[in-house]
Each structure stands twice: as structure tokens, then as C-alpha cells.
Image (cartoon, rainbow, N blue to C red):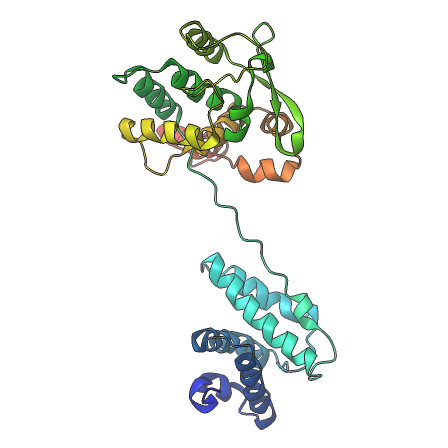
Length: 318
């Protein structure tokens, strides 16, 4: 067991200078130690409690007794809006929740006020998107490659033009494409079918690929994008193909295969498409997923700013 007198921060003990409260802190350290947590983890938990104890002191609250929800709201707002990393916010709140859970477990607190501390959801990190110029650069890189590959041209154009997932593209069969209606039938997550739109550019590149593919037999059950043995390109193979061209193109190294799908959604949003339509095209079961996925781009924000704000760039010129 660790030497508590050395591990408990003096700043924490000196906030209240109360023997009973400090005794509870000592018991809390024993409790954390019994859970086989590392010294660094325990130290971080205790340092995070300094903010909680200081807040209680300023507001005449006891940190070891029941605290009402309305009393905790300002503390949570302060932690969340302090401008620190989200991981730090989550750690701080987690430390307070741990202490509150300890108080309830050992009957120091009659109420479980740890349940009042809601953890903020960790934001989903979105992939970098292509600008329209970068999309064109990538396509031109494929077209001008010494070993020009019509399959790869059609593949990249199709992912960007339809917004399909790599796994979905891998499963596309000849019979899934309706050139007359400019549609592709897609089997998405959970084996849910949906229809996506095939652009004229994409149709032309797919036709060129099929006409020049000697191995391609127009049978509905055959895979559209084939490997050298005539089988379906695997999702990993598709990712490798696109990564190869991204490296040759000299574009931002943060761009990826998934960036094509994200760019599809963002560019539709920039063009004024309804979010419900984008949701259906992407195959999202929840509109919330689409709202996160299709964050408003800088281009859109600048356009709105220029139209609406009195200090906009366009109005300053007049």
C-alpha cells in the first residue's frame, strides 16, 4: 500500500482543514489502492478533486455529503467550457464521479450524486475532406499514371459520386447497375438495400472500363470491380489502390479512402441538398449520424457570413 501522507496533495488537505473530511480522503486513497490502480492514476484522481473541493468550499457545500443537481451545474459548465481537451474534461468528471461513488458505497452520502454528473460524449473524429480541385487532381493522377488503369478510374469516381462505403463497393455486381435509370442497388449495413445515384461521369468511366476489360463477362452475378483472377476486389485492396494514387498525387497525407465518402456528403450539403436525402444516400439509419458526418464546411460558413454579417468581406469593399 502506498504512503498516503506523501501521495495526498497538501492543497487538497488544506482546502477544508477538516479532520473528518481528510480522514475520508485517506480512506478513499485506500479504496483506490485496493483496486490495483497505478500511483499516477491515483495521483491524477486526487489532483482532479482539488477543483471539486475548491468549488464546494466557495459555495458552502460539503464535498462528502449529498449535493443537489442544481449546485453541481455551474461546476460542470466551468469544466466543460474551460477550453481544455475533451479527454481532460472526461477525466476530471470521471474523477469526481469515482469519489462520489465511493461516498455512496461506504454510506458517507445518502444520495448517489455521482449520477448527476453526466459524461460528455467523446466527439467523433471526422476524416479530412477533398476540395473539388483535389478530387480532380486525384482523378487526373489516375488518368496520367504510366500504367493507366480504367478500373481504378471508375472505382474512384464511383466512390466519390455515390458516397458508398468501401465494403459496399466491393460487393457491387454487374446486375446491381441500371445505366438507363442512372442507379445502383447497394446492399448496406445490416443487409439493408438502398438506391444511390450514378453520375454521368461515373457511368462513362464504368462503361470504358467494361468495354476494355477482356476478362469482364456481362453476367449479372459477376463482380463489377474485379481483381486479376476475376473475383471481387476486397475492401483492403480498394484502400491500397486509392492510397497508391494519393501518394503519387502529392495531396494531403491525411486524405484517405473514407475521405471520398465524407466529401460526397459535405459537397452535397454545400450545394443545398436536404439532410434527409443525404442520410438516405449514405445509408444512415439515424439522422443524428448524418448531422455529425456532414458538418458545415468552411466554404459554407464564409458564404453565410458574407450574406448575413455587416462586417462581411463583400460589404467592407463597398
